[in-house]
Length: 167
Image (tube, rainbow, N blue to C red; front, side, top):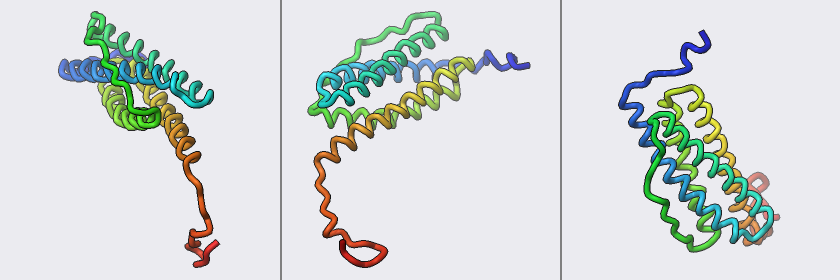
């Protein structure tokens, strides 16, 4: 009974949706991989280089696994145009851009997970979602760390909401 639902037979239109989503995500992952590789060189601290390297390794793994999924569904290697890398204006703007792109890619992974033809693929896509969420945390850490060094807090002008007094 456990193996009963292991291989699902989704309708043909679902397979086409899955393939289109894989192609879209592969394009995104390829550009993201190039961007992480570039940003790793620009990173101002060793800690940020380590975080960017971790994300880069995950992106490479996602890229490889997505191509494997495409091959398992079609029997053909995924082919397409090479990614076009556009050099970002600054390190922090690139980090911010990737942050928002990661937010946008999670729903694509969720759609893929819903229509994936095998449980194995669904589990792999769940791992991708987990990785993307951890990347969001790492990128958020980098952004907060960069903003904190720029801020100077002056608590003397902050009014307490509870006591109605100034500190």
